[in-house]
Image 1 (cartoon, protein in one colour):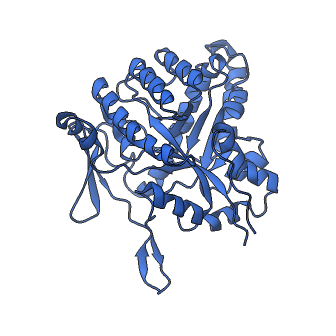
Image 2: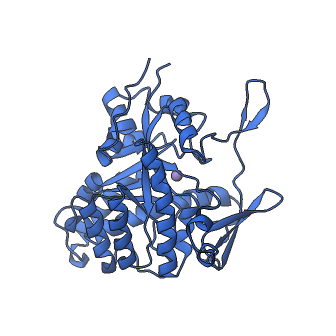
Image 3: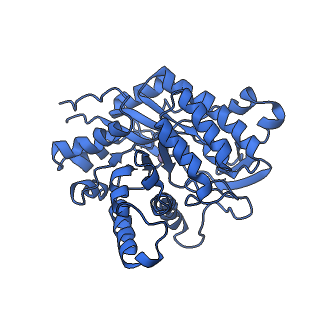
Length: 375
Ligand code: MN
């Protein structure tokens, strides 16, 4: 069977438990996100700046090993930048856009200076991966309570050679939304530094009062919540396009990771119809059709979605990337090659290569080229 090589537009680093206590004064570290697991192994509580978020732990996927025993499917390289490369080579994953894990909870911090200090600590640690090997493209965590702190961190991480900035799909709690003019300096700084905006689905800012491990309870809750996490990325992109961000910053690029891909052409159609049919109410007016920004400035990564390939081959959205979601449970660790073959065996080689390798390389041209697929 051919080994298919693919870049991943959606992967994660796992921060060491002592990251904040090592990098920050004790009173600051104590307010940073940390996870405490229950003795029953079924729940965890995330503590963030005096708030507590209790949630059910995802159950580990199980595999049958060569002796027929059931073992936990845990990626050996999840916490180790060197072992991780062995996992990637085995799976056929070349370069990765890597997001934080516990750092995703930074958006629940509500003190701007505390947030900025936490982001600096996460980023100073994360860049070590990228310096270790240029197959890692680390997304810097940007503090999103106000534009001043955000812009300052964008310039700081650009000087450290970060090529991507992780933005939660909503700004931090209490901050204006992505279509608000207060963020204009942030978009300008991101375009100026060439940093790709990296949105990861499911990263809406929560406060402890409204958080109950998801949005919905009752029959079907798990599935309803899983689908619900997807919409935030679509909303973030819609807000940026509608507010004229790409009018002002045509070189700004955005990727929405882990949210599938056929939503792109769908949102483009909705935006164009609204723009045309509701023209008298549309403010600001845009220089180009909204769909043109979606098709050109916006990228998306998916892992298993069979329809995502057709967003490119049948609907013409060239910016569709594959993503492994390594080392998360929704990801493809242990079955990456099977997944890639199921997705791409019937797809023309040039189209396949665009999705597995090309769109990612366009976003991150500094990454060494992926190997050719192997027989
Ligand atoms: Mn992911």
